[in-house]
Length: 334
Image 1 (cartoon, one colour):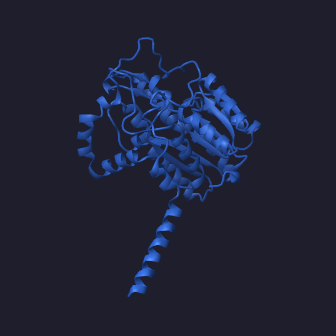
Image 2 (cartoon, one colour; image 1 turned 90 degrees about the vertical axis):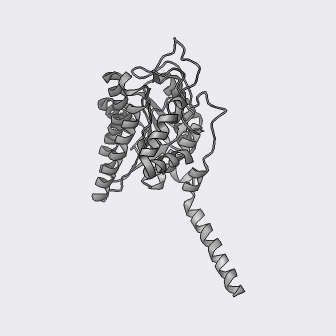
Image 3 (cartoon, one colour; image 1 turned 90 degrees about the horizontal axis):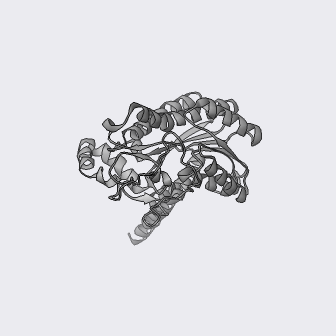
């Protein structure tokens, strides 16, 4: 998809101070977008703003807790006043916690839900009220393979991602019914090498870590940019994410037993969490944490499955040509 065709777009990215949001801000800036950067930590947001500016874009960094709709609405007003009408809204902000459900307090569970689920609902509401009037725009929900398949130690996060899946279906059908040109889509991500594992609240014996194959945040950012321009309902990133989704569809009960045997210990390292470690569940951790986490040597910078999905038109054409050539060759031999 040509980069020049989308220069000057105005995009909003929530959770833009670090991790996937930070990488996504850079990806959009490289492709000529102007950006509203939302998040709680101003040090990270300001660093992201400088990166966007260095790449030739304009950016506003606005401290925003997405669980508070009034804050989201004020941020949207400011972005449109200073950058122009919002073309794309990326709902990326989330909160998580590694813990058995029975060990979580109601306040902790509620906080994960308010940020990870209602935060995306709030962003979608702020975007839709503006986009529907103009009859254009794209909203990207950032999901996970865990939107289809819950795993142990992440009940609040998995519940929120499952809720987003139902939310997507409902809003998408409403837009289709109204023949709206506004599009809503969802990107289902695998494990990603981000700083979140060093600040997520945790009650497991060791340092939290992603389960399965790990990808660099730039892979996720590439998928999010593509989803914002491809008019598809869903993009699944990485073969492990697709495998988890398909395994649950084929035999959910059997997959339960597999995860019960393997998935708890796979989500933390033997090294204990430092006593001085801070988490970001209710307050941001100070500092600029960048896009990458501590799994640099284990993370893949490429997803062949994502590449195939993004280029499926070309692949179908190539397979068609191969089939036609084979048919002609076979006809000549006959």
